[in-house]
Each structure stands twice: as structure tokens, then as C-alpha cells.
Amino acid sequence: MAWVFTDEMRFYLHDNETLLDGMIRTHHKDARFECRQGYCGSCRMRLKSATGSVRHTLSPLVMLDDDEVLACCCVSNGTLFVGYDKGVDIMDKKRDSGLWLN
Image 1 (tube, rainbow, N blue to C red):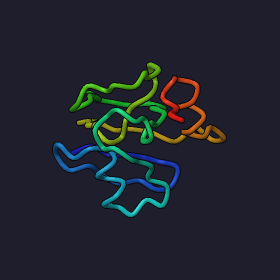
Image 2 (image 1 turned 180 degrees about the horizontal axis):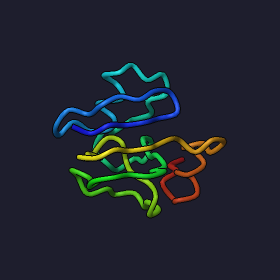
Image 3 (image 1 turned 30 degrees about the vertical axis):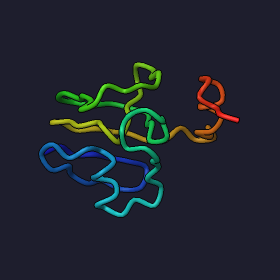
Image 4 (image 1 turned 90 degrees about the vertical axis):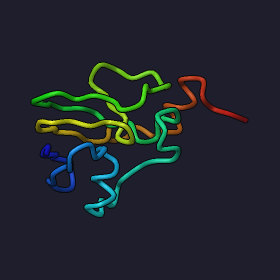
């Protein structure tokens, strides 16, 4: 079991529960996602700090900074402090990374 602290609340993750599934289960208002498979980057979150291990259950197909995780496939056995970048629109990140489709 892992503890998660977001900008909205704190909650725990069940064993092998992804960060996104935990956010949906706890009714986060700002849970962002689209594909849930690790390739769109909509669920990208800033990992502010962590104890224990943090890993992705699927290999992300988007480019991530060292302090970013994809909530849809991120699991942990420690404590996570995560949040969304304020003022950064996911569509801007997609456009900048070449994922923007016309």
C-alpha cells in the first residue's frame, strides 16, 4: 500500500493499483486521462517527491522528464507527492512534442 498526496487530497493506493485508478476511485475532480495505455501523455504528472519505488507497469511511449510520471501506468510501494503543472496545457505539450495531429 502506498500513500499519495496531491493538490486536492491524500489517499492510499491498493497493491498494484495505478495512480490514475486511485485518483478516479477517490473522486479527484482533476484526474486527466485519455488512452490509459501510456502513449497519449494526458495523465502526465509532476513527481515532487517519493519514498520507496516508483515504476511504470507499461513502457511510456511519450517523452517524460526525470521528475514526471504517467498516472495511468504508475505504481508505487512508498509515499508519493504529485501534482499537475499549473498553467501548462496538455495540448501545448502534445503540440510541442510532435504529437499534435491536424
